Length: 405
Image 1 (tube, helix red, strand yellow):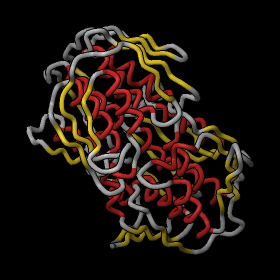
Image 2 (cartoon, helix red, strand yellow):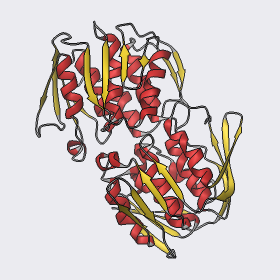
Image 3 (cartoon, helix red, strand yellow):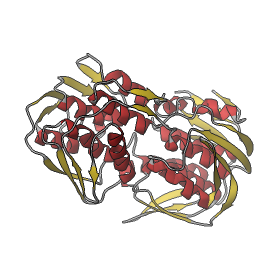
Image 4 (cartoon, one colour):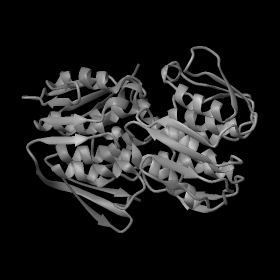
């Protein structure tokens, strides 16, 4: 397994020219386009591997569909193939086969889909056989496991003869992603009523449209981290807007507390150094993909943190809580779990260099890379970034970092 080295650099500036388009938006509009007859004009789709997999798999004539490690693709295609009457087997990597999908499968079965588990009950791989006709127009689903289950059901709802009413039970996590789905569905011409605990979608017909995808705020978050840890920094991020469909635009407010100023310049934003708070408390329920990034910044800047809403991190590409704990200890910090929250205990003194494992998780690689503003960094298995930000290491070189493998 190869390793990438980043030489420490405390002052830098430039444009992150290769910042990818939002894969969350891209993957949704690809499903909506397919449901509207594949006649839309889509601009600036993400070059992230997750989106490229969706693009290639959604119209594939192959019987076996391998989504590799793309969780969104697995969940959205499970729903899509179920209601479009396609006989498919959906499979993926070994890690994908450990990621639960039972809640979505149960919901689809109750609607009329015939789905069989081929190995372990509740987990991929799946065989999708047919849709026998809609059995109900109202189902309940937990809101605290994955918003992607809810989004998958929302997007197929208009093509069901009776439409669908979704009742959300318990704590609802990542709500901005549900709101994103509703907004995009409306862009494709269908009605969605999003209430606090219910989503009501009548039967309807999607209309082809022209749509341009904005840049990815999750990918942008790593540049906020670089700026927060730098002595001097000025970074421009193209095709980003403060008024965004993406919940991870919350990084602006979080990083303001950690010393990053954000200004708009046309269709871009500019990051510069500011003053930081001496502690941070944040609920990541609706933006869990930001947690690793923020934890690393707090750890390195000596800022104690109190975090809630991290529960879903355990079922991501890896158990991100355990991975964070392991890697933060290498710089003298820790993430300590309590009954209802986690405490980030920062480093008293940073080492001059550190080697970080990535656990086959793109966000682990990019969350720890910004430490290069303070020390020499080695990242194991750097190619994992292809999942969401394929040219991340090239952008580091563009702003002045010395990167070598």
